[in-house]
Image 1 (cartoon, rainbow over the protein chains, first blue to last red):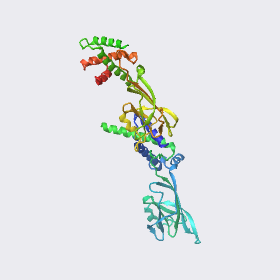
Image 2: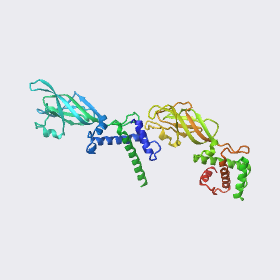
Image 3: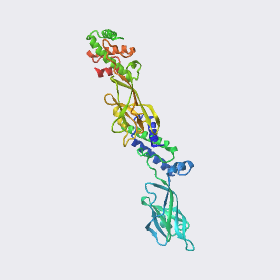
Image 4: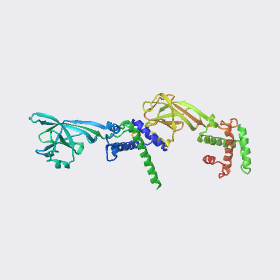
Length: 225
Length: 218
């Protein structure tokens, strides 16, 4: 639905309950954005509703598909604070940006390393997202620590950056991720509408209308008491 | 009823109920009959019942001009010499480029709103309105303001239709009432009630609606 259709649907719904004058469009925007974020968060997060989590069904996968974006980077900045000489070195990638990045759902990297003959090799490796406190725990575990044949570690750090820990003696050639991006709020002036699949737009507009009506009802009860 | 018959009916009715009241000259009775006529026409307008006042209905097709400096508004200035006393309906001929597209131009109803509510309908930086039907309100003397959304366009040529109730001509010795015969008895009765109120303001007219309207007039 376009922003015109969303606003019209909201107005039609509240008119059924006797709200004949138009609701200020900024208020409609706020209510729809609130319901939009709630709707998407529920689909992201299995803790809220395990039956609705991301990719559990084809339908939910399709609803959220427009929020999926790709990120690729070949330039990295060293982080010295997490370097452990002889074990691994740290780098960070700027990431897609904290205003955009919500969750990473798939990632991989390529390391510049050498094969057993000492020849240069670009080796694709898996990424293991780990908790910060697990760095020290797994530091000396040869089966879990980063290596150039299996996997390297990734953690989330400030400013939307991605910290990558790779084996000592290798360098990062590239990092690729696919992620769910944060929603862009709808904006009646610029015409930015809901990004997720259009089949649920009406549901979101109706939920926003009912929240608005419910708030009105609560306000009226408070005035009476 | 002719004017003479109305005056005669007034005298009969007034004498029946107010033998002790003051007498009225014909000229005074005409003043009361004209006041009563306006009251009865206003009642019909309020009830949206236009059958008995159909002689007073004026249909007008005109052109709107650019309106206020803010929002999306048009101004329509009523033509003609008749005095306006009540709105019946209005339409605008518009095109819409997107969202509920109207192209070529077609007529849509204008919805009457009160002037003090108009701010809620005006397009602004913080309130972008969607109005499939433009809104119209009675603005200054003889002008109407039409509010529309940013997607609606008026051509400015024969794009507003207005239907309203004009003020009836005064009942005089040579001019009979314009309204339907069905209203004539009511006009006489209301005129009698007005006459009774002149010397006894607390006297009831027998109708709460007439009382409320008379109290504004007397």
